[in-house]
Amino acid sequence: IIQNSKIIKNTDHKNLNRAKSHERAGLIKEARLIYNQLFTNDVSNVHIFSAYKSFLYKQEDWEKLIEISILYANAVSPDPYGMLALADSYLLTGNEKEAYKIFDSLFLEHSSDIKKLKRFISKLFYHNKIDYALEEISKIRQRYSHPDFYALDLGSYYLSRMSYEKSLNEYIIYLNNNYDEFDFVRKRLMTFPIDDEVKLVIKKILKNNPTQLKSKILAEYEFKWGNYNQACDLLLQNYFSEKELYDFSISMMTVNELNNAERIFNRLMKSDNSEI
Image 1 (cartoon, rainbow, N blue to C red):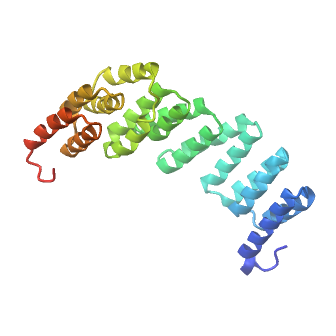
Image 2 (tube, rainbow, N blue to C red):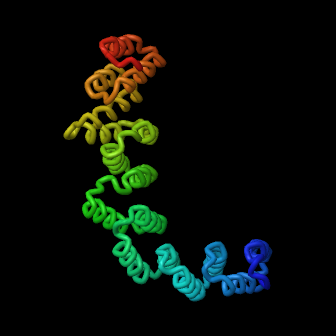
Image 3 (cartoon, rainbow, N blue to C red):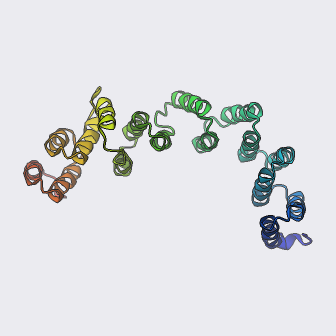
């Protein structure tokens, strides 16, 4: 299939498309031959490997899938993502024991590289290996005094599972260390459903050992729930910047809460901040 190394990328692309076309047409034998030759000629090519791996997974050819994954991991070594791909293959084939051996090694060898650690954790979540992932997250947070490691992702994960208490706790952890991301996180927090049970959960968390941040978040929720006086009281006592006060007064005006908007404006009138 491939004769000239100078045009290998072009031929790779064409032949990959041809293999996929054969696969879609049900010409499995023909597709397998093309995938195998492409991979044999360029074992370290991630695009070829990924396509071939996907094909073998669909064919439930577990033995060959592991075989090419080992070859690929060795070819791209010491790149840890080759070993991550192998761990992924073991999980796809149901061999958790071998997968966890690799993950243990990866977490140990790359223990100080936060970017890589996040990739490893994400792969575990993809395969729903939650307990193992949470254990590693806890270790990383303690080991590097990095309390917000993976907190934003965990908040989203728990939210998608409707585990609102855990989600809120992770978002609080994240904001305690990344307050400049408040507006971004606020949008996620405001997607929590409005029902009495969830409200009780939110209030319990935010009123337990209250902090300025927790009270600020509660003010946002009280506004969402239509409790405008409580929202105004909380924000006036717990705002982080006068810009937040100003924005909140505008929000009050949009729901025709002119008295509360006036309360906030009166506070701002006493400000020396020329930007407000």
